[in-house]
Image (cartoon, rainbow, N blue to C red; front, side):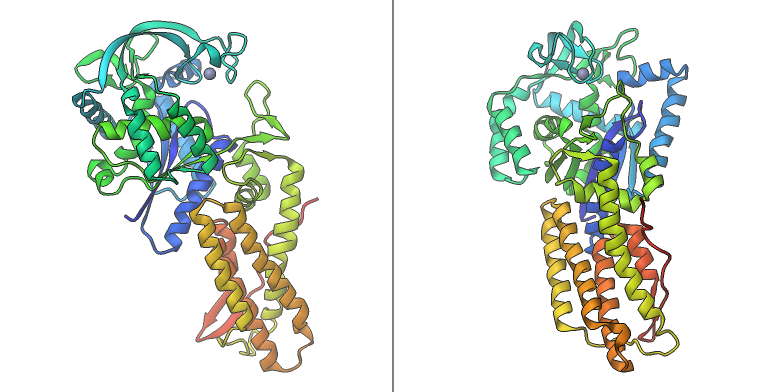
Length: 482
Ligand SMILES: [Zn+2]
């Protein structure tokens, strides 16, 4: 295994929304990109089942908790299959081997002297699965969940996060691309520089709260805090030896859970004496027509419905091209249709149709043979491959696609300038068409991680037999929409 990438494990008590899909698509594109570079890739996703929210949701649905979690885990796996996500692993935190790894990590952190028992009194937001500060509240309510947090006072185990401030800052200094994009890294650093509080790492197991979850080793009256449990999934997937040999290269996350991944998780690993991940990549939020999506507004975007309407590849293209990675982005039907018609129907789809219509007419004549590519096109294709590679390495997906679309524009100019349909000489016409189908092949290769089905359709339309091309004009890739 040469490249290991993860998504967060998602709470099982909900179905995937566009934000989950976006983070997962980003990880999928990176996984496919690295595989296309010849690397062996592990790409894991999964579900977080051990939270109190799961207990509440199962009760609300009137279902046995095991039956409920089984059903919902299937819902998530099925959603990723529908969206053509090529994950190699799918982890559920109710799996016994995960519990084993969580207990071992707990024991290592305890042996390092980083756990102690204390009394916690705080404001607990169930929606966040986290304690909140008075200063986080707006009119006494959690600003995100619009609910009043419970006052909780209990005995907990605490993780000595405060002891890791200097070590974290040293680590950040030595790894200046640990968090991507850079402005998010600056936020993380500023947060750590202010000083860190120890974090409550367990909950009392009592009727109706924290009965579910993983018991603290040797203290069954305490359950391990759901985040201390969930983060460990990244080790459970490859196993201890796997992680020690090759920790995750990239944890793809949303910006709302960046601190857990860039502060608490590295500190836990340092305490447990384990290697740290390579990078934490944090995407921004997506709004719907400029409005934050919420259950109460009922304006959430269902990624499956969107994919059914426009096609998987069009949704992937929109999210990656429209939103500069790391920034917040906005979805609207107008923006989606504009991108679709301009870039896909009139852009890529049109070029593919033009070239392959002309190439198909040569079938049976045996004229299009592998030859020498026009040097200008060859140089442009190679330069684009380099540019795309550089931009992928720094998570600039939108700019990578922009570079690729310059190649599409170049193809269009080439068709217009050569006026292939007017070339009477067979050899000259065939040479020009060879240039164009080679360009389409180069585009399909670079496009494959972003739009896998489209790339396959382009490749399938061009079959070489004994260095003679048999082209088939494919069905319209992106019918225009009004
Ligand atoms: Zn909340």
